[in-house]
Image (tube, rainbow, N blue to C red; front, side, top):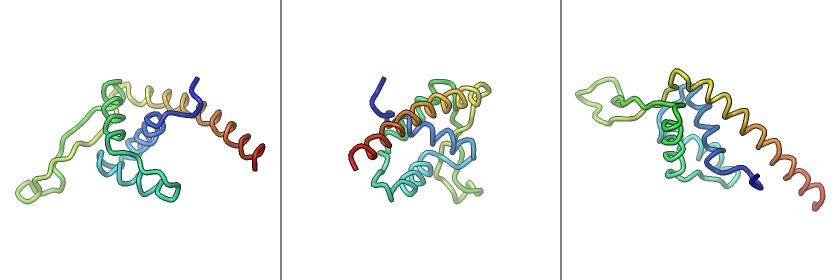
Length: 119
C-alpha cells in the first residue's frame, strides 16, 4: 500500500465529480483545479489532467464528444472535447470514488497523527 494517495488518483476523483456536475471540458477542468488548489500551493500539471481523462476513457468510465465552442459555427471555430459518462461509467465512477475515499481517510489519519506527534 502506498504511503499517500497518488496524484493521478486524486485528480481522477475531481474529474469524475466535475463530469457529474457537467462542468466543462479538459482545459476548463484544469483551470478550475488550479484555481481551487492555488491557496494550498498545488497546481496540477496539464499532462496529468489529460492522462487521467485518457485513463478514464480507456477504463470505460467516460467517453469523449467533440463540439464547437460557442453556438455559431461561422464565428466559433474552436473545437472542444466534452466528457460524459458511458452507460456503465456512473457505477464504475462511484466504485472508484469509494475506493479513493478509503485511501483519503487513511492518509488523513497518517497526516493528523504526524501533526499531533510532532507539533
